[in-house]
Image 1 (cartoon, helix red, strand yellow):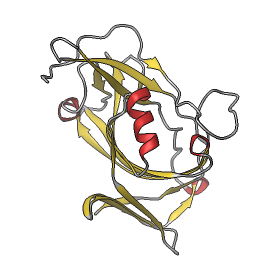
Image 2 (spheres, rainbow, N blue to C red; image 1 turned 180 degrees about the vertical axis):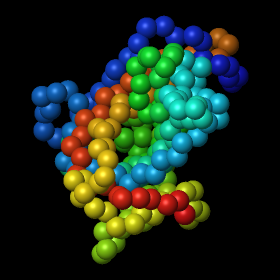
Image 3 (cartoon, one colour; image 1 turned 90 degrees about the vertical axis):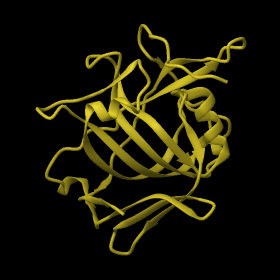
Amino acid sequence: MSHHSHPPATGNPRPLFMPLLMGAASTSGAARYARVDVVAAQWRVHANLLAGLLPDCFVPLADGPDHAGLLTVAFADNQGVEFLAGRGYRVASVLVRAAFQDQEGPSGDFVVAMFEDDCLPIVLGRELLGLPKLFADISIEDRPDSSMACEASLWGHPLFSLETGPLVPREQLPEQISEPPPLLGMRSFPDPVSGDLFGEPLLTPVEARLGRWPWGARRR
């Protein structure tokens, strides 16, 4: 099967919500999570480098004289997930802050890669949300001093990891932290004749109530 650049897309990315397969009915039509613990680190990277990680219809959101965008590595421990009948699963993601078509278009975090430790959300995310999900073993350790250690691995081989210092309540942070942005993805469809891939950009809204956040993080 051959691959080529995604054809130009028009209009807005299509919003989708992950459906409920099990558990109590949701009045909003969106999947509900009782609690999500997130550990993340962010870097400012030149937009020209980030552009190579995005499909043609997305551009990195960049600002400042250095024309830099935002690269995020995040680990999440999802608990009380409705479509898993109250069970949970863990996620390790690489994200690029991006916009659809131009700097003024709908924006969010484009998912470059997303590793999860449960097959059901992997299949749902690939088929419905256009997210490049892969399997990995993911550990998230909450230490006695409120610091955290996270690692994604496959067959015993580490992929990447993240450690933080002690976490502090949000009200103690010196700067306001914004609500999480939507997730951006690209769902691909193969042409049955040529085998080429065609893409449909998708936007998944994320709503969350923020609790505690790390004062700082360092990559290991």
